[in-house]
Length: 394
Image 1 (tube, helix red, strand yellow):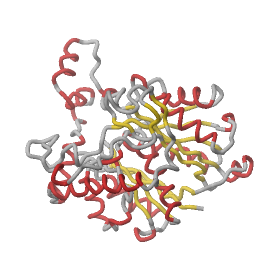
Image 2 (cartoon, helix red, strand yellow; image 1 turned 90 degrees about the horizontal axis):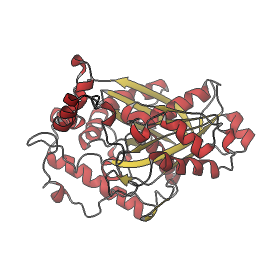
Image 3 (tube, one colour; image 1 turned 45 degrees about the vertical axis):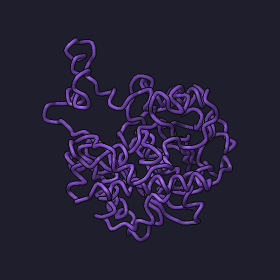
Image 4 (cartoon, rainbow, N blue to C red; image 1 turned 135 degrees about the vertical axis):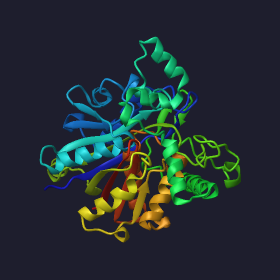
């Protein structure tokens, strides 16, 4: 089987996913187009060289509907380049990269772009699961039921918890205290602020021009946060619970894209490989806890290639909730100093369909900055799944 190489890895800054957020005025297709064009430009490629564009999106409705990836491909690369949208919820961006990698390894394609886009300010989370609004009774449900309304579109025996409740259940199972969750979250902001101030993210970020000016930094980092301040926030999902807005990932807008190539494409287009994708894996997990996927999928992906935890130099584990990452660290005995070294989604944000690709972008750049060899990304996924990808610099 051939190798699949990462040649380029870029992302937009991450903007707050609300009406006054940095990218609230930008259509998600336009946001993704900016980063895709930059991937091409930095490698002196003609867009026609790209055989397909595969993009993750967790809420493919409204402005992200009608196969958003094809619309991005048309606008960024031209009508001759096809595109397909994939949805593995929070793992969508990683799934897109996995599919592109597999296409290259199977000798079917040579040069692909994979990534993700999500505008949570313009296409709210869960809006693809609302009951059909053409019926008056459904409109009443939408207006009154809150997050529980999504279960109205599922079979009666397939109802799911809200993500926050699953985050609570994980915290309870592992005996985490509110202070532990808040301390982890505070550290995420500290690390992200430090990385921003020292310019660690500059090479991976594509600046975006908006009516508010040029956005070049992630918007959600709170330098003024403190554990004590976080401790004053009310619980968000359960009365007297542990999960709050402070120890949860932020609702965010953004896009990320990676250029993947075969050996043949590298030679043909005179482009430089930076890393290869060693392995990927997905798992299904307990639906009630729902977010424990990284605990199961990380050993699985490492076993595929005969590696141990100690063989991985850096881990990027999506901070859906502090309890998810803390549970993964505890169960797998991960070295804390190797996990999310520049902060995570609690500080930077979690644009659902983007995060898997964003973690890979950040991981590759940090491996290069530290001159390290191997890294692993993993994400929990709504509905009880997990995904992981291992990369190695070349």
